[in-house]
Length: 270
Image (cartoon, rainbow, N blue to C red; front, side, top):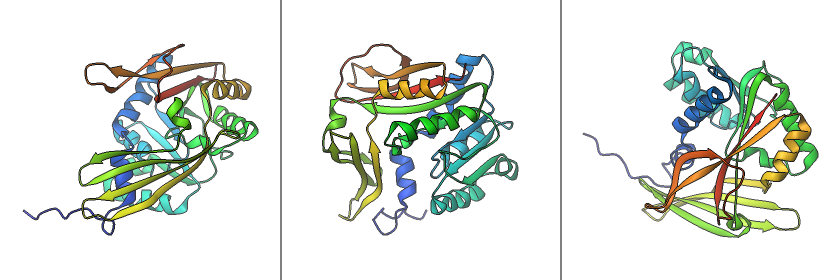
């Protein structure tokens, strides 16, 4: 058997590293499906993945059921080309026909109406003022069927306001989350993802983000102004014995002032 080569900055694919260290696509697809069924007592069949990047959610979605359809939207032609090449290698012809890769602006692009619009990995934080954020939420609202759900994620806690680096070891590389700068006057937050390898090489600023750190009350207010009728917050559960987060999220109206937390936001159209 041929020995797998050691990962280095020269031979590693940053998109593959991102997907291994940041995304849990199986969980996200299950969360979308289970949450929609919880709210509507029916199956979610169509999704729109905004700010899709490599569109792994859309890819997994059409693989999950042979009736599922996904629209994946991003402005970056380069990442969409990567997604297309990946899809052609991993999806059947039928699955390829049920996923639509679209170069466009999630703020304004119109698609056929879907059961769920999803914007994960805090991607909508690229909008730094209320006007643009509400405009995005209004476009998501228009993109949903009558029983549709908008699903977002968010993070916070007092560590979210700090400049810090966190490292996590993975198979063959280390993932580094770098909260590089934060301006408390504007809540502007600049973050980078770096990857470090056992040979001492690294990919610095493999990904960079220039966001506004939005609070949950601000997001809820903007969603209501955009027309959504009900907004629920699902907070991540904690395993006291293992002293770590679990993959369970529970609807909450109150939680502890933790140093760091991750939440899902579910907004209903009616």
